[in-house]
Amino acid sequence: MRGCQYFGLIWVLCAIAAAVMPNGLLMGIFFVLSGLSGGLALYLLGLDMGLLGEAPKEAPRPASSAKLKEPRQEPARDWKNKVRDSFGRLVK
View 1 (tube, rainbow, N blue to C red):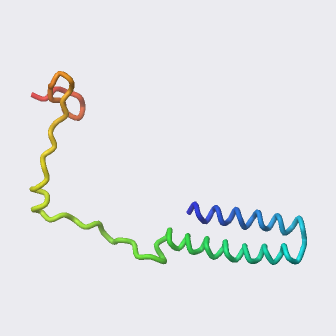
View 2: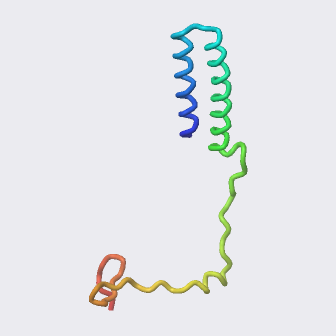
View 3: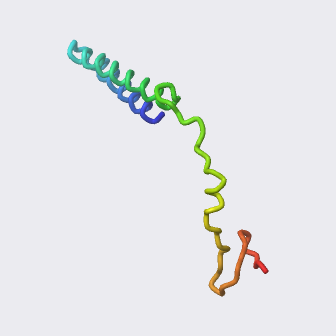
């Protein structure tokens, strides 16, 4: 969504520049930049909403054997080499 905001800002700045100096060349530049920034903003919006690309439906899950092969996480030990749980209490 951030990209759409930047291109909207470019469009507003070009419109202000075209309004301040009503020149044919400047109006042409405004229309070209307006079309480019609007198209790019719509493209980025489509990507953000998932309309232009396929979003993964679900993350792959490991097999049950992969869960068994993972090493066990050892409990945290403090500087006195005492085992503590996640709340900081000593574990017997």
